[in-house]
Every structure is written in C-alpha cells, then in structure tokens.
Length: 108
Image 1 (tube, rainbow, N blue to C red):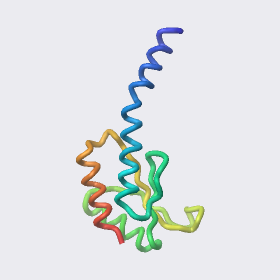
Image 2 (cartoon, rainbow, N blue to C red):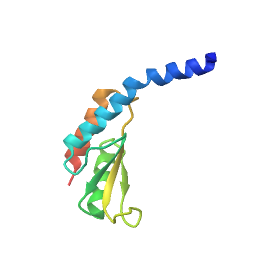
Image 3 (cartoon, one colour):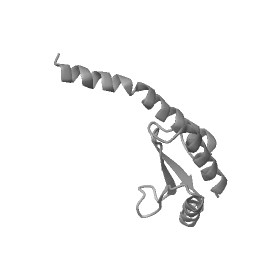
C-alpha cells in the first residue's frame, strides 16, 4: 500500500475518538431536550410547538450568545417547526454544555 494511503488510514483511525464524542454530545442533547429523538449523527432536530415558538426560542438563544438554526413550514417536510443544532467537537466540552443549558432554559 502506498505511503499516502497509509497516512489517510491513520488519519481516519485517529478520528474515532472525535466521532465518539460527536455521538456522545448528540445523545446528551436528546437526553436534555424532551422533544428530540435519539440522533444518529451530529445534526440534531429539536421540535418546537409551532412556528412562532420556534422563532422566539431561536431569538432568545441568540440574545444569550448561542446561534441555532430555525426551520418552519414550508421549509420542513412534515410541516413541523424545529431548531436545528449541529454538534461541533471543536467547541470545548464546557462551552458545549453551557450552550445546551441556554437552549434548554430558553425553550418554550
């Protein structure tokens, strides 16, 4: 096998811990926010009661320094409103947990 291919395999293997951390953080979101199903990846959809509540929730988070995605009909396939959270393991764990606290506190 070529040296470049071996280096790529080493890089892939080195990411195992990071992938595990993404899964762990996504599971923590699902545990802390009641309207989330167990996620399969690092993008987590959080249901909101309605479009106005979703916008107010996202705005309240933003005011406190936490940016979240906000999606509502007609851009959602099931006509539901939701926040979209993206897990980033480049964010220190303490900052991630503080952001999650903010999202939970601001929720409807």
